[in-house]
Length: 330
Image 1: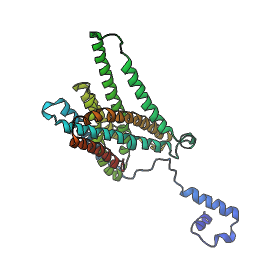
Image 2 (image 1 turned 120 degrees about the vertical axis):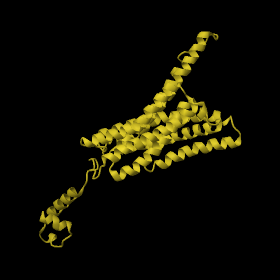
Image 3 (image 1 turned 120 degrees about the horizontal axis):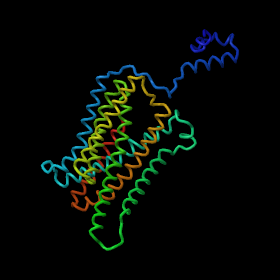
Image 4 (image 1 turned 135 degrees about the vertical axis):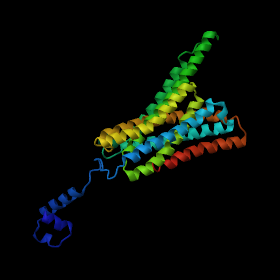
């Protein structure tokens, strides 16, 4: 041990009596004692449970404000906004969904698979798992929509039965559109809430502020999607409330897990599930976002003149920009 200490201090007396083998072994010992395993959970020095509980309610308020701001205008005539304002809000929601998928889901998924803590099969042998899962999710959504769209198609002449079938088909498509958006955003909110709940006090103060706006903007995006594919007030409200609780639920789960000994967010199991869930959610939201861009956004553009068109594009880019900036923190 004394020899190792002398070598670590760079003493000139050590080489006088040490063989090459001793020098090699001592150097390896020093390197071993100073190396930190990046796949082991780091120790949290300060953790104020009251602060984290308060953060749960702050994020809950942000989620509710975001998703309800659009839905209330749709279902409550007194709160209904002018058509241009509603269309700009929908455009911003489209940008939010697209940016959320790319920056807040697909990029973290790729980082999880590429982690040095993962087996080489995920980061060296085949480093494209995140993009593969996202692609499969998007193709699955297209296939499912196509099957539902052609499920009740009749080639006979129009009849009362055909009208009922078309109504049922439209309802199925609206349910699929709303539930897939809900699934993608809710899974992501649980994961990001969990990692925020496991943060130390200093990190938590920054993360909870960023997560508030993250959930606010994501809620606006979900509300815009529900507004264009409304199933009914009760169902829309249930979906909105469910989304609003996912982020806080993840934070609460993080606090509970930490109290029971913590969870290794650098472990293979956590990274694998995070990578799979985030990449699938990214694929779902990318398909939904581009569908909204090609469908609802283009339809809204046809309703307004040049000033209205500029406002819609500004809303789209502002939605993207807001979530892109939050990508610095979450």
